[in-house]
Image (cartoon, rainbow, N blue to C red):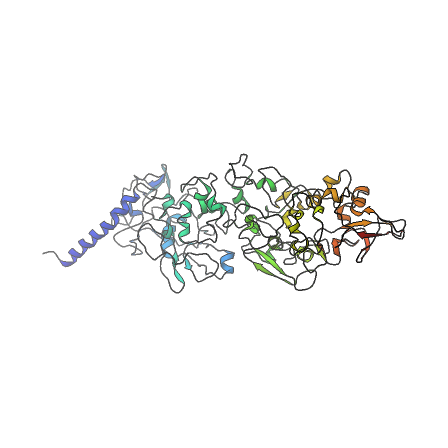
Length: 621
């Protein structure tokens, strides 16, 4: 009769064999088969056992999972994110033991053949790479992670569904699920469902899916087990049919999904595990699938993707090339003087953006800005600079994106009535402004005063229903080809304008060309040639004057630019955007208004009337 202990030992051995054989069968054809018969470049010189590099039935440490490989004692630099920190999400101080087992090879600090025993005897396994002896994992192989884990998906981090704005799937993945699923590990408690470790996503025993993933990541299937990005399903990056290939399979940007931009290990874009640094992720090198200058042809129906060329070589551009200053989420301090920057992500949300621009005549943000962050000014009842701002996410109005930088929300803006504090100039409490935030004050303008094709020429857009304009109605790329991107990226026209704008007293050769920006909306025939629709007639002060179409007299006859009399954004002191001779350089020194007209005194008038000219309204206000 066999001793009870022997029977128990045999039973345990059989049980272990039942567990090991399927794993060994799956691992044999993978790079994790480090035996001499393994398929990879890195493998043993002569050792034939497959499992021994990680497991042993005797003297294992830790006992689960029968571990045989010497463990790393390295001090790892852990992943850290300003976004998670700002939200109060707990970050791990060190790597848990479960992930340390993997890092025993992958951090490159322990010899690949350093095991506790081989067939019960202390030994170190000799390892080679393509015939050359090696000890630790070579630095140039894909599996090398090093001890700096700041550019890797975080490990040993709690899966905490109790912290807002982290966009985690609820309920969380289970602890220890069946094979082929994402899993979490203890400890768990409260809103922390467990921790994320290397084997949450990777199965070291099989490479059924690339990179030993536990499930397919086509269409972000694996990533979306945990990450629930708001409005991602309808975004361009989740629906685009533009060709794109990855090691994970698929042939389109939509099928690549997360991995089109993110790299879960050793990405250059820290701390957001991006494939490349900042805007270079969007350009994506020589790829013709993203937003770089390598795009020379366009898929039918897919245009406007070569964003890189709209920045590079342009005289004026948003400074996307600035590195290391962007934060998620940016604050007044990280947007102000000394930290000026404008990364793609400052204006666009890549998880929500969709094709499409704003509707002309509306100040609502277009689809390209869907999900972007911004600020809303709290104007109160006074003109000028708002007292405070409220961060908004997502934005409703386009100007909310722009005012993050171009206002007193941050520091370093230019002051004054023609300066860079646009929140002060667009304030609806001001006497005049272009209607970016609120409905304009100069209502009742005849429809004929606006350029053909603009929404303001229809009767429904006049009077109290006067529509809005947006920053990008004037500011944007100066290239207008059918495949050119649209937006305020870069321009060879000063002030990042779409068209020429004479910011001087006089235009020189062609009003239609040099004042092209203004004539995009304001009818050239009215303001240059004196066609019906101009608001005022001008005369000679003290002489009774009159009868001359005011705008025609100034713009056509005297070659005076729009900017010499009118401010562009707004005025805190005058109606009709009248621009005094102040720090902004205007020529007007006095301006009065009454129910039938008024008078204007300017240096450029001179002569009779002492520089003062009267004018009368051509039709009621």
